[in-house]
Length: 424
Image (tube, rainbow, N blue to C red):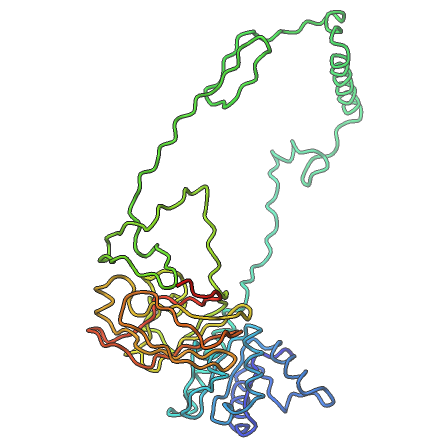
């Protein structure tokens, strides 16, 4: 039987994990749970991998014990690598460990630590059933081809469905003889140009005058006629236009030129190349695979906006931003020597000063590197060198302190990871 849900738990939480499994299966959702579903004699690790690969939904029983379990961490990592739907079910008032947080920070949590457990069971079941409906392909019954109308069937060849029976043999032979005769005449004219005068047949010579079609772009002419070259309309030279601030790409350490209120534009730093000659973008450091955050203010301030190259957009968490975290996972491990960050609201100076700006930010990399970054209260990309170059597969940022503004919310407009050495 194909399972739908994999239940990941610490052995210390087996009691509540079994209750969840019993509840879901009672309502028609088949589950896989260890050690119940491990086939006797099969390697335990292989059984876990096969089950996670089979199940579409991964329910994580989150507790202080599962935070410490290396087996649970491995199961969560495997589920993330197979694009499973991860649903954390928190049974204690704890935050996920550093090893788990990256994979579950952006997921919808079910909190059973302070609410009646039965209510959360119902919510978990509804979430799983919702994902099941979303995954089911729409099925439509195959439709039979429409019948061929009688008037059309009478004119169809005999080999097509709905056609009438074959023509009489004498008529087919007559048609075949006519076709062969026509082919023979064409071949005679091709091989012997003088045959048309000796055969008694007359042909009409083309008129020596050429009348070019008004829609034709090129017309073949005889050798003794002058060729006609169409005249092309001159291509207008585009006039320089103002470029919105949002379209200017920042370089690490580059200061913004003034800025403008929303709806106005600023002059670009350099004229844009013509569309037909695109300028390739320089390497921008590690390639970002996925981004997640502990929270976001609303859909206009998503975490991935901190990596879109646009200073007018960015990530803004809920509240003042303190202790909020931003996670980024690289496509492949890469050497990171420094990081460049434009913090706060990057639209213009007025918006920048009106909101909270980050004062200190902690960066944590996958090798365990932990470094505190201190900002100057300036609206520009600020570059921070790591103490030593790091080969990392992910990075985590945590807001530690802020410069206060009128709008009590903090954010990050842009982040860039650098593999090069500083040029200044």
